[in-house]
Length: 259
Image 1 (cartoon, rainbow, N blue to C red):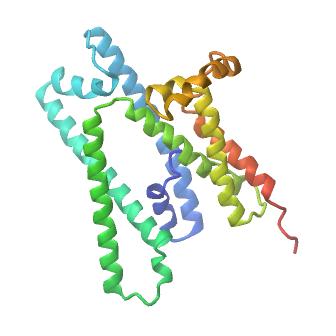
Image 2: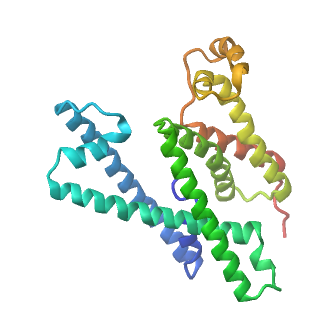
Image 3: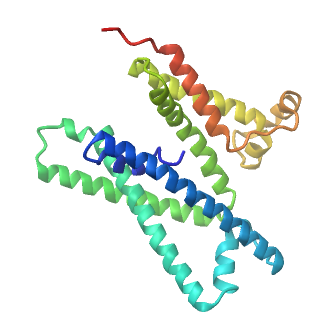
């Protein structure tokens, strides 16, 4: 799903021509592959180091624990500076993407020709500060919950939100078929709902642990065991959503008119 979100796509559509934009996407693909490999490598080294030093902490606390308590002071300072420098651009980029998407796609700011620049600026700032406040409330909420499994929830949700995007992207790249926007929206809504139903039945224990959907899930456990056995769907739910969306778009699409 790397590269499909609004924040990353904005820099591709801001390039002066199509060829340079395509070049940017391909270059970024190789760079991201190298970056992700380095993260995986460093993560593995952290676990090896923790095993050697008998460091027993939750997975999410492993990196800061080693950086702050098991390395020299100057490394800890660099870690804190690096953490701040990484978090602020991420939060700022997400806020900017949300603001622009809400103003343009939801409010239709570009279509409101009667709005003057002063009004547009006031609305943009209002939306930006509202999203910043919502971010702040989420941070406080996650802190109060103090539940490490919240990362699992976020990644699980991302599988359902990015799945249709992946399907749409693949359909647009790999085919030249024509689809109706109205029906494509239905496909992008129905596909994740179907996969969500399958995921609930498959991972019923996970949903029970999160206390979701109440007592109804207890009756699904036997059915889940008989249907899936020991197999459990993980983060590849993103791929299932993408495939189902792609197939749905194929069904509702038609060949382009000749001529």
